[in-house]
Length: 315
Image 1 (cartoon, rainbow, N blue to C red):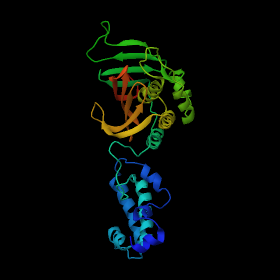
Image 2: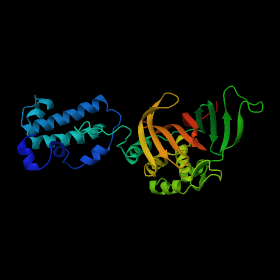
Image 3: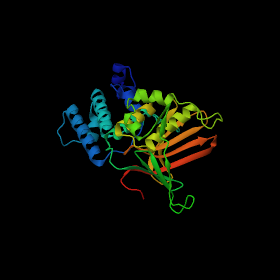
Image 4: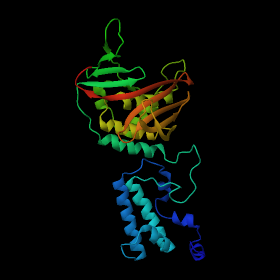
């Protein structure tokens, strides 16, 4: 950037490069999973063409070469195009990519609402599937549970018996969200509106008087448990993700591995008892693991969801 450019604009080079609509939102977007090679190639092709048009050079010139000689005002347009196309390709625009200082360690630029809105879109696009039973396989106890639409439950743990029987049968009490306790049919009737779901989550009251969980933590756990192990239709799962993105106390961590070694994104809730964490696979919208404080921050309960889906048979 020349002295003339500084005098003309009254801005530093960094300020000027970021002087285009949407720059703040792009920086706040944080980091996401790397794009595919095809998406990156398409993005670079568009930027390369924009650089050629801006400089008036023939098509055989590269973006890197043109960027060196393009006048500053032209480079601002190319940078803006680069940022917009990068986001379209799935590349997060951060301080590092824009030539600014990186965020301090431990900070998270991407808001929970942005991340969870993206996950909500993935959830809405997935098939509801079909089957007679809702099957959930969890660790660390290697437990399998099969729930019928009539809410009859079949529970088994390979190698273990229950009063001499291989399975334990009973009635599944349903899934709770705020003041509502719903069965399978009730899930199909539950609202999918994010604002209404958020009000339900926030209406949760304490489970008991002994202080095992505060109401806010319990509401978060109820919602994420429903996402993890309930036969909720895609529209409901999408609405729940959006509602959680607007819940106070929710933040997004980085990429982590669950107890089974699968990679996902950590979602953190700061409640009165301690910190509750869930791991979400953003590619599938599946909730992989839930870790919640029980009576104290050091006393944690963890459930790793190895499978949750519909099936036509038990076993």
